[in-house]
Length: 348
Image (cartoon, rainbow, N blue to C red):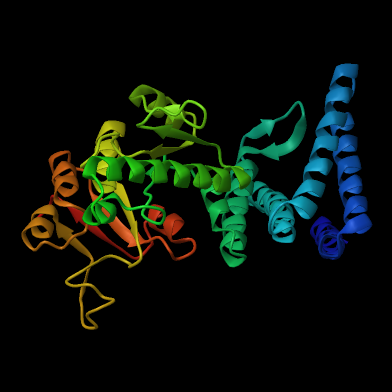
């Protein structure tokens, strides 16, 4: 019997057991996690034979942490079953991709002293297979945010609004002092930023809230270099309190921060999938633009953003991408260049 047949039969049996244990949970999944940790520790000791006791202790801790992480994902995380299966799919795809790429391509050895049969071709094949299958599973099960973990993630910063809580312009129309109303609106954006930070960090995404109005107890003060440093470290930065000054909209704050951060694009999340000739909710035959220029937006008063924000993006050559933020997974699609949107830029 060939090695491929043996590996295939063994793999199918292990996959079936893993699927059953994951769905059933409880003691069945705990046994599966323990068996996996035992296999990992055995492989570690085989590789580290003769390296000293410290390596055995490290291997035990590594295997134990992996098992405990699996148990936490299955029982405590949102969508635990789908997430646990995602982990297994990544492992299976890596092994399968590495096996076939290594056998069919061959080439230089990856680490001959540790594992003589592993090649660089197998390494890249495993990574490619894991990326493709992991992303497909994430999209299929509604875990689109995982796609950002599988691919090189762009540096992201968000300017948070507060219109769902308080609108300064609306309050001013009712007789509030305009400056006071705008400051109240800025406080609403801080509340939303803190709520968004909590949601993102629950998903394991590290974030920082920077407020243009100093609030040391709940956020960091906005300092440009600090914000850039957070982004360089892979954190998502949430900008709150607008520009910190009344009479400026959240749109203007977004354009200003985009210019200060050196952003490649400004993504404007709305309730529609782009810019239309008229409000598509009121005009049935309104036409959607695939792309258009800043000049046309201003001359036709298309109200993508307020005029000062559009002008600021135009002067700093920052394209505006308008998309539907209410559609699940749409941000990841737009970042990947596939989402339905309208691009506003300088080119004619």
